[in-house]
Length: 470
Image (cartoon, rainbow, N blue to C red):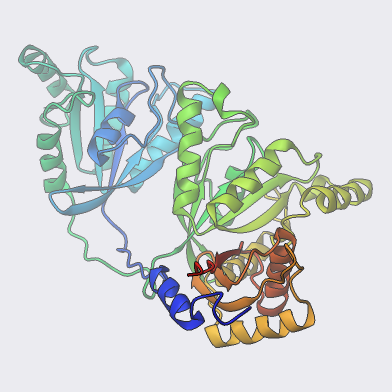
């Protein structure tokens, strides 16, 4: 380049660097175990609507049919500066059978683990046999119970709600979860019943690492969560789509505490989803945004599908670290292994950096190998390369393999820096455009030199503009 053709390199680069958001590792402090409030009641009394009202946003899936909420799902709530964990549960029907029985069991477990129980009754219907049966169980539990008379929209209905005194659980608190009527008064009562718990840090400067479990429906996400937890934390059923809400669970694994997020299976076309399934898909994406690393489960016994590839692309687009777990490995024979390797070579050619673990969530085979894979992926996700070392590496790389000539001129890499971590993003200050193939070449060599196993990395350009000639 001629001396008068471009502006001064140093001043231009310094100005561009000043505009970059070069960040460091995110520091995140998280409180320890918070008091737990379980929201229980028979199906379709408005529990999830009340949960959404308390947390101030539409998180719990709500639909005007019973049985939408199936697992016990936790949210963090805050009222008058006091934080607590709110647990939404499926409908608790003592006479339930089959799938409904499993849902009721999860609700009962939530009540047993809670510090305060929010027992929701539909005041517009009155006391049912199921309400009386659940009330009898709650009286024997010895836990503080706040009896909530829901769907009370006026003073006349408040008077009618007084019949709930006969449940023997104290004063009924009339509210309208849908319209918010008297919800503040209800929360005041809940705060009075909560135990005082001092905050405790979950570790060093940040909380447990967050792991999202993703995959198509019925691939074994909930089975894996139950296996690593060592107990049945979430429902498992052969019917696809059992999980609808993202389920957060703190799990001790490999000597560390992890926050696992079980998500609803991502289906082929979101535009075809309706009702609860549509909102469940939205929350699955939101759960991925909250996570640091994703475990993408793939059924190894079946051919890789469009859904599998779409989920992997979703994780890449989100910038999260990734571990691909080929589940149901106990069902894979020699022939299937051969064809699976061919499918991986052909269809996952753009993600060779993703860490791979072959497991069986049902039998527990090689589930312990997930821990080192998760740790390596998260470490790679937060890796920062010193600027001096990065530029030395690129200088040697360009000398050995210069960029291809474009428009009769050969672009130069003038300077490089890592703009951010989580995921790692690199910016190349250049004198001209670098072809996509050459940038992919740089990415591949960056991985060979510095690792980044299990983490996406991004390589972008800042092209120096030509100075107008006078």
